[in-house]
Image (cartoon, rainbow, N blue to C red; front, side):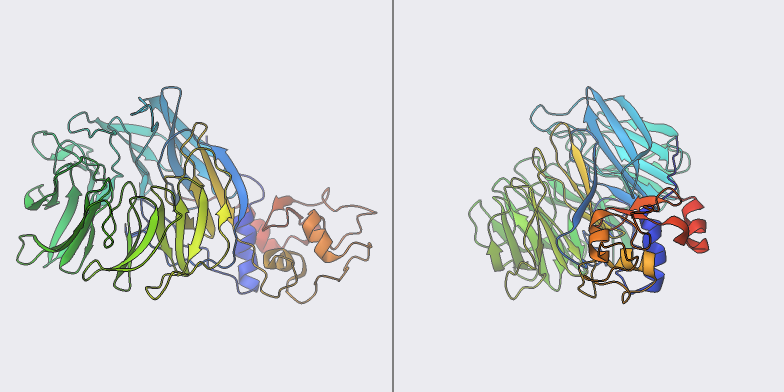
Length: 495
């Protein structure tokens, strides 16, 4: 059932942002690795560290989140069932959920792997056992597209669904993926199944006016024509079947990488036949970046990724030579690129680091955020609409949401709180007492009380609304709620 709260912190932010310059909060994250499937967002980190806003048990697993239209979509496993969740981004409350029987895939690494994909009002999910579902993003009404058993890799299916044209594609059914029509939900290609799927998600790209989908299978990289499933190129990549990091195409080249001591390679497309530009292999190689479960990001001619063994590396795209390397990121950490630096997860210490995206030198931009998460944080961070999402893989599997404290006038009071009550950033400061009740505005902010009402007479909450905004706790809007804000609070949200 769809639920709506009277008061939403995100809507207060919308009103506040119209009155004061604050960071933009308008970039959705509709699928694994963001809008362009590359681990990047234009959103910035306005302050550090972020403050925990809410947390919820979603079950064991490794699925990341998709964030669209004010809702957070993810998946987890508990007691023999996978559950697909739709949560309200403002407070983590459940909008709808759907559970179905599903194995845990592996006793040591239980739960879902793939991240939901949101497209045109629908949510597509793919389970570790091969259940491909489509859900109505608003109501949660479900349709089982297919249950795929062919080609399952050793750790279970992990491919997040890719929307390409009118197709949904997953790395399953064989060593060149499988596609279904979005309208009829029928299988389009391939005609027959085979073995050898990998754990990576499909990645679409254009080269020489030809559209490709790169499928990193169990023992090869394949380039597939999405219109008909024809395999246009292949490149052998022997070793383990744990090819989990997505290929990274750029220009005439494609980067592939596998952990467990295997290595990484840069491939030239050339005339359509792949050839090696450079290769960095072996568990102890000083150059290159060997990726286990998570991907690297490309920025400014350099790759940033957590190497097998827990070192964050910056390596040149052109030749794989390491610009710098820093240890201390667990064994299988992860990285995304924001508009103001890298967000790097350490999977064993369960910390989040904010690191400058520069090949010149390693530089942390603030003290690491300790999450206190149970289990390990194998899942990469997501920054969307001004909030960071982090997940632990244990059971219970906790999803935590963090927001930012913004204090542009350095008075210790969150800008949003000031604008909500006073309409500006100049009325209140660390010593002012606007309502004359003997409690400073700073203390009122910290206590979550109304700075315009003498608490000796009334705390103002009975006449107003109460909600959480910023790091200051409950904000009592009382009779100060603007007509425009009331309209916003009553307006439905649409995925």
